[in-house]
Each structure stands twice: as structure tokens, then as C-alpha cells.
Image: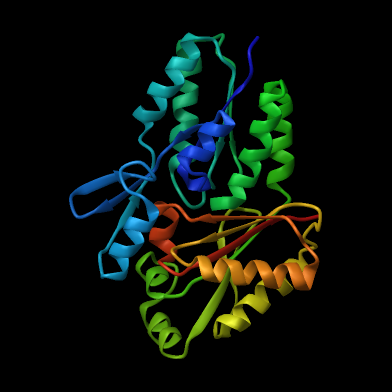
Length: 284
């Protein structure tokens, strides 16, 4: 039996190049502008979309269609390759449910097909931490059951927190009322939002100004017992300078030395907006 194939969706914010290097099949979600749809990280790059959004362009998002999953799973089923699909939180997208149904259909058609699907309840680079680790284990020959168990365990130990530069994007996506967004913008209020263990977004704090937002993120990591020996993944939406400043503060305050800084994908950035900053870490 060959290596287990790891499959993820672009909601994990691994780039196509990163996924390919790991041997991972990355299935894109879509962003939509007017009547045109774009595959995340393929038809449109995040930086291109963020520049457009800064000029006032409005984007929405769409999940992976079930027929796309079905086509991919069918090929692996025909070749009798074990598969594990590690999914973006089902609380934030219908993509997991589409993948789960496509998996069930593939197994019904090919009873010997060995595939499992797991809802990580994680978002963005929080999911990427898991995909990265599990893909490396898969490349080392770990079995499907072993990989599923590791994924399940890691998903419970991912800490996630983010803040945004412009709260109007959260309002547009229904995460914040328009009136709250107006006053938050006027007063330079930065909301701090975590991804809960249930995979939902939970506003936990509001602070005034970017520096206080950084300090609140560090304090959150301290309270969550972020592991010092693990890599912290920092995501940004066209705001590398903020990510670097965040990295330096975390290193100084928490003694963490390993970081991965990445640009947020177009789908995630549609909802958080240009200038947003995310921090993901492993905790006790």
C-alpha cells in the first residue's frame, strides 16, 4: 500500500506551492466579484484582490462544489489510494459537508476505497499547522488511521486569534453590525476575535489602537499557554509590516523563536479585509 494522500481546501491558507511541496492536494474555494468567480490562489492572487478591495471592490465567497470534490475523489478511488481530507471549520463554510458527501458517494461506488474526512473546527493557518504536520507524517509512511488520530488530537490544541484593520468587512459579512462598525472605525477600535473549539468566531475583546491590539494578542497567547517550542503562524492581508511587528513582540514577550509568516488567502481575506492580522499557535 502506498502513502496516504492528504487533501485540504484553500480555507487553510496554504498556498498552492506550499501544498505541492508537501505532496498535498489543495482544493480551492472561490471568491466572487459581480458575475465572475475566481479559484482562490489560482485565478486570483490575494495581493491582487486586496489591492482591488482597497479601491472599493466588493467580493463574496463560495464553497467548493460537491462535483469538484467528487471528481478528485473518484481518481484516487480508481487508483485505490488511501485519502484523508482535512477540512476548514464546518461552522464557517459548507465546504466540509460537501467533501463529506462526496466521500460517502465515492465509497458507495468503490466499496474498497479507504478515505476519511475530518472537520478540524479550525480556520486559516490554524488548519495549515495541522495539514503541514500531518502531510509530513504521511510522507514518512504513517497509516490513514494514524494520521486521522493525529489530526483529531492536534485540532483540539490550536489557538487562534485575529484582529482587523477595517471593521466594515466584518459588518459586510454579518460578523458585526453596521452601526458598531461605524463607531469602531471612528474611534480606531480593534476587535479581537478567537476561533473557538467549536469552530466558531467569538469576539473576546475590543481595544483602541494597533499597539494595544498586539499587546492583547500576546496576553491571549500567554493565557492559552502557547507552546514555546512550536512554530507560531502569523497571517496578514497585504500588511507584512504588521506581521513582522507582531512577530517581534511575541518573540520578546513570550520567548518564542520559530515563526511562519504567510499572506492570508483571498477567501479568508474577503471576510477580514486588507490590513487584517491573524496569529495561530499550538497550546497545551
